[in-house]
Amino acid sequence: MHLPIISSLISYLLPASTSSQIPLSSHQEPTYITFAASHEHALSFLPNSSTPITLFRNASNSLLDGLLSLRLRSVPTRVYRPRSQQVFHEGRRNGRMSGQLLDVPWDEDVVPGPDVSDRETVLLLAKMTSNAYTSPENSDWYPLGDRWNYSEPFGWEPDADGFRGHIFVSTDSPPTVVLSIKGTSVPVVAPGPSSGKDKLNDNLLFSCCCARVSPTWSTVCDCFSGGWKCDLGCLSEALKEESLFYTVGTSLYNNLTYMYPDANIWVTGHSLGGSIAGLLGLTFGVPVVSFEAPPEKLASRRLHLPLPPSDDHLVHIYHTADPLAVGTCNGITSVCNAAGYALETKCHNGRTIRYNTVEEKGWGVSVRTHSIVYIINYLLNEDWNANVSVPEASREYEEGCIDCYKWEFGDWLNTTDAEC
Image 1 (cartoon, rainbow, N blue to C red):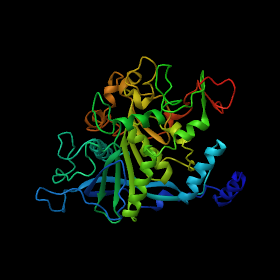
Image 2: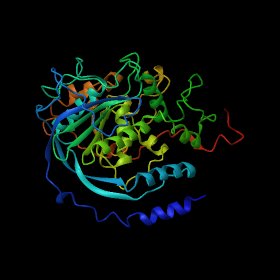
Image 3: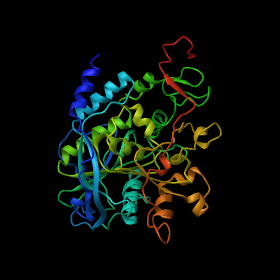
Image 4: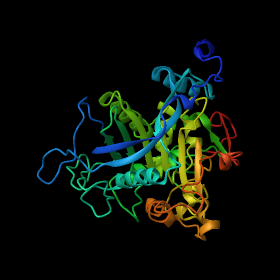
C-alpha cells in the first residue's frame, strides 16, 4: 500500500549521479597490515556482551602478546554502504511484497581492502579461511605465526550446530578485522555438528525450487507448483527463516562493528561460507574475498538485497575443475545429487578470479578439488605462471549468465493448474 511513497522517498534520498566518484588515487598507496590476535567463534547463538572476548592464549595461559608479524597487503578499495541499515532492510521487506528489487540510498567510500593481485595476501586469506574448519590444536590448522598454536575453544562443543568461523584482528590503528566463515561439513567426508544446518542452507540458497530435483527428493520448502513452476512469494518467505546463515551472519557482523567501531572489516570464507561472505558484502559494503563459493547471485535476489551502484569489492576465487564453484555439480547423475545437495546456480555477484586448471593444468573435474587445500597447496604456493602471479579479477565469466532458465517463477500457488 505504501510502496510508491517509500520508493519516492528513497529516490529523493539517492544521489543524482555516481559520475563524481571518489578517486582512488587520492588515497594511500598499497600498505601492509600486521596481525597479532585471533578470536574463535562457532555460533548457533550470538554473544550479548559488548566486550571483545580474547580466546587465544599461550601455553602458560597468559594472554598473547608480541606475536610474530603476519602481513596482508591492502589497497584503496571503493565500496558502497547503505546509508541506513533500517532503510536497507525496509527495502528488502518491501521488495518481498512487490516482488521487485528496490533501491536504497548508498554512501560511497574508499577503504583499505585486500590486494587480490598479491599472491601472498590471497594465500594468507585462504589459510585463514581453511582454519575456520578446525582449531589451532589440530593437525589441519595452518600456522599463522609461531605463537598461534594454542587455543581456548569457544562454542566448539559437540552440540554446537550453527554458524562457525574465526575472527582475526590486526595490531594496526585503526585495526583490520577479518571474519572467516566455515563452509559445508559433508557427513561422509568431514562430519561435524553443523552438517545438518549447512545442508539446509545449501539447498535453500543454491537450488532453483526448494531442492526439487526429482519426485523422489524431500524438498526444503513447499514452493514447487508442478512441472517447471515455482512460487516466487513462497521462496521469499522460505528465506526468512531465522536459522538461515545469512541472518546469523548479519547479527555477528553488527556485533563486530560494535566491538571494533573503528576497524576496517573484511569477510572471507570457503564454499557455503564464501557465498555467505558475498551476501554480507552486499549488505554492509565490506570487502570480500571468497574461495570456491557456490554461485550466490540468485540467493541475493531472492533475499531481495538492494544492489549497490557497484559490487567490485566482492571477489570470488575458484578454479575450473571444481564443479561446485563453476555450477555444474547438478543433475540426477551428479555426485552432489547423490549426496542430497541441490546446487543448481551458476552466477556470481562481483568479480571473479578464475584459475583455468582444466585447460592449463590438465586437472580433471572432480568434487575432490573443491577442498580449500587444493587452492592453498596447488595454486597459491607459487605464481600462476611466469607472467602472472594471480589471474586478474574480472566480470568476463559472469556476463550473460542465467540461473534456472528452465523454471517459471510467479504466483503459482494461487492458480488452479498448480500440481502440489
